Length: 195
Image 1 (tube, rainbow, N blue to C red):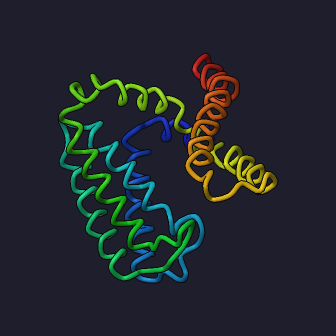
Image 2 (cartoon, rainbow, N blue to C red):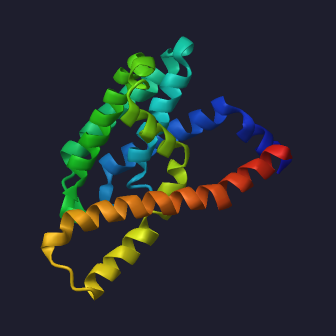
């Protein structure tokens, strides 16, 4: 166990493992999408984020992450072309999801060169602040969304209230995630850092 924890502390090992998992799941999704198990069929979308992080983290050593990134984007595009299964809210196809992820990843990497200037924009600083607790937002967003959805159904709100409901869900999800971050995630992170 101690050996595994030491290996996992090595960021290269961890990033390489995640990059390989991205390529593996992309390949699996391309070759046999009907056999790819949950949650691995959605992992490539997350994996592209890991690859972009790896690419930007190792700016001076871009060769390895760049090759992983390019190979993954090519595989994801092939996967998107071969699959058009409708899933999720609004029945967005896997092709559309995959292409959006590729486009978003490339835009983020391109925008990184303007990071200092972009951070001067107030709205971006607000988003950056939310980014600090974005994992908590990811973990908890369904709780307030389901609560407000159920409340809207019980109150028999009509479609006229769609935008008010939509904004309320976003605001409530952000507030809920902020509380979760400050009272659950952050104390846990602090206690782990003390060890």
